[in-house]
Image (tube, rainbow, N blue to C red; front, side, top):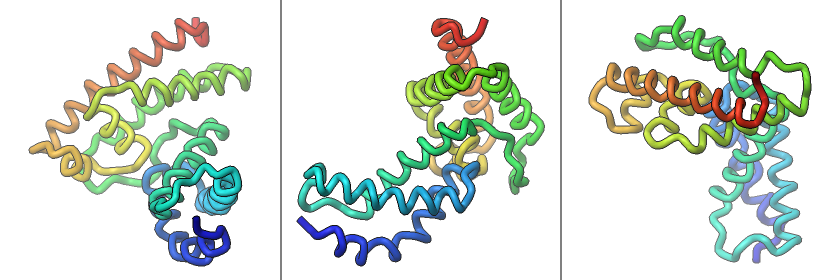
Length: 193
């Protein structure tokens, strides 16, 4: 197994900018400073995993570091309770910005109407879990559009659709299903009335 110091020497500086760009594109609500903190914490976690013999020999270090860092960034977002925010940068394609804003506000309303921190944390966990239960291509479309800042054209190419309009239509259907799932889950867990 490689030495931790050698891994830091080989990978820390080499991956830093790639990591920051990767996380910022997928989780634009995180500040660059927070992503830099996550990056440092990632290497601490790598070291801890190595000390605890949780790293297999022959590990693809780049993929391993990015996966740990991405998971830590998601947790940082969850702790900050910023899973859903209105996008504050304009899009270059023909996205209906008002519709996007209204959808995000309706999800934000579900998150904002509680004063209890524990309830808020439960709601964020439910939101993340329910997002993971969405079938494809819904999960990819919603994550890329609302959290990754991808344009409809970028998503169209990623999921191999033929037109932006068909992606928009699918996104609307997916979002409606997702909102319904969230409301049902919140009611079942007594997180809303």
